[in-house]
Image 1 (cartoon, each protein chain N blue to C red):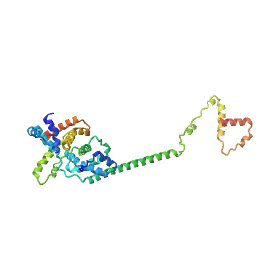
Image 2 (image 1 turned 90 degrees about the horizontal axis):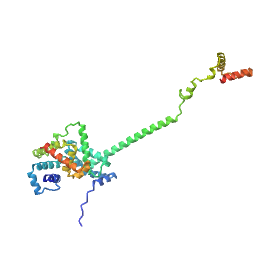
Image 3 (image 1 turned 45 degrees about the vertical axis):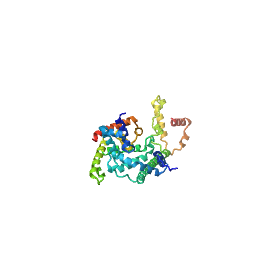
Length: 170
Length: 181
């Protein structure tokens, strides 16, 4: 390490008054322009800002700082509570929505199935006259009024009765 | 038997006491470090008129995030790092507006206007020069020159190596010699 480097390392401590130059070091500083310039720079930097007005009273400054910290923590707690309340409200709405029974919609599976045509392949081979007869009996049965009490069936013989029941059952 | 001088309570003990609810420990920490933080901010280019507010903001950020202090770095150099971040944020907010002001001459001692004017001119040149340094060079230089902090300690504070801190210091000195001529 050169004398210049040694002095450079010691400059802050000397500038801050923690130690002093030896006679030999002082002689080097006086002779070496580079070290002299650096020494002036470090001295100036060491005392830079000392002309600033004194800082505020520590107790008042601490009270202001801790007051802000407490205020921010309180605000954060309030935010957390607000979010928690909003979350709970949303959860409650979801639970209520799930538990209330809803009327069946128009597109429920039962309705959809009722709307579909029923395939009856056994009718396909019937002659037209027979088909007409069956359809006619179906029309008759579907035309039964709500007031129909079935008393008219008493006059039918067994064969006719079988035919009517067979038509109803399809 | 002579009475021994009581040793000052270490910063980490004061931080622990504050965490346990002792606000006097916080006042002690503020009393120890506020003025040094103010000088660091002023030396780094803050307007003298803004220093008080910036010191308060630095301390607010520090006490809000005390768990962020790694005790291997000194409390003061941790505060300097926060100050430096704050100053960078402020500078960005002002979008590069010149932060150094000739109005800082208001700080002169009016009993010796001629002598102080020369001193302030020199101070202003130095502040201008410091404000033009890369951040690490400026921080290392100020930690060395204003606090006498050793390179090992600077390295721990700034997350670098002692060798790199020494290099930053010498680069800062070289650049300042050119800028502050």
